[in-house]
Amino acid sequence: MAQAKSIFSKIIDNDIPTEKIYEDDLAIVIKDIQPQAPTHILIIPKEPIARLVDATEDHAALLGHLLLLAGKVTKMLGIDDAFRLVINNGEAAGQTVFHLHLHILANKSFAETGLGKEFS
Ligand code: 5GP
Image 1 (cartoon, rainbow, N blue to C red):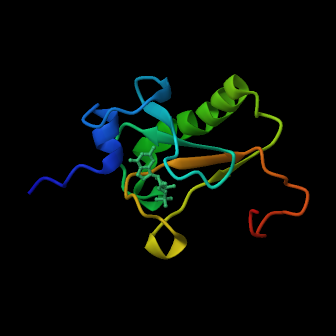
Image 2 (image 1 turned 60 degrees about the vertical axis):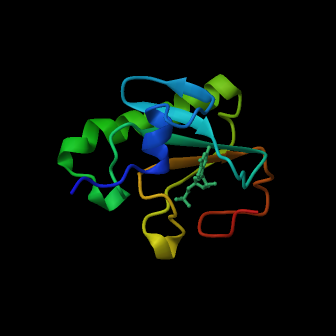
């Protein structure tokens, strides 16, 4: 039986109309519907890989593309000086949509935060 389409696949296929900040052959970039920071965007590969750990060697170029896109889009938005990149892998880590995506969070104070500390 075919896997049900994720909410992100529906957005990618325009089943759900959503403003796209950026789109290319491999990925889309959209604003998060429930932002956790003043700027909160999502980089989503068009290929529906459920979790980061489900990616294989065959996805190496795609994963590289997603990271390069983080640089490109943050430059586009003028937030390339300070942003945080997050991937939640698995339900216990907070993943709610099982279609790989990168969160970009920006325009919050990073002064009190550090690697491994809560992002506030
Ligand atoms: P996760 O918790 O899986 O790492 O992140 C999923 C993210 O997708 C959440 O931050 C949630 O707010 C966002 N999200 C869920 N559904 C939609 C939607 O329909 N549109 C947009 N733009 N974001 C969504």
